Image 1 (tube, helix red, strand yellow):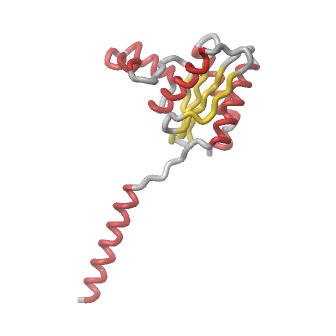
Image 2 (cartoon, helix red, strand yellow; image 1 turned 135 degrees about the vertical axis):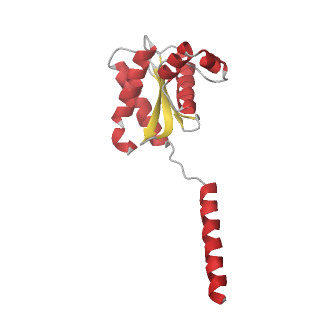
Image 3 (cartoon, helix red, strand yellow; image 1 turned 60 degrees about the vertical axis):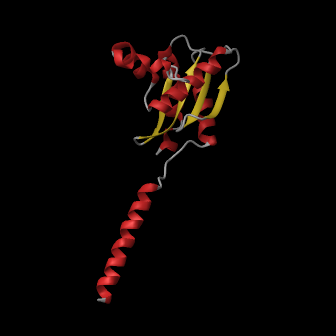
Length: 163
């Protein structure tokens, strides 16, 4: 009888542990050091092409971690970069893909009405494996596709840290 009670207690304990393990999650996130490295590499990538941009890097929740504005980048690039980064982190997708979806899918057209969303090319999620840990947004190059190229170049510079 004692063995049955002990076995039952052990089983209940394991079930309880499994349930509490599911209730608490461990997530990867963007460190300040990584955010600064991505922002600097992104601005440098654009500067190499003579684009004066701002790069914003946000964590997985879309909260700003780093912001760098190149000399001669327009003041509007600050808000654009941060909006693109927030949108990309929130949607876990590039803002260019979201823009395409909004243009082609009538049901997605109201995405542009979400407060804080900026559905223009130039926002790219930062991933470790398949997990989005943040995003980088770029504003100021002459086209969203060029903003996105700079963001991808900035992420590529720190690829070894994203493993």
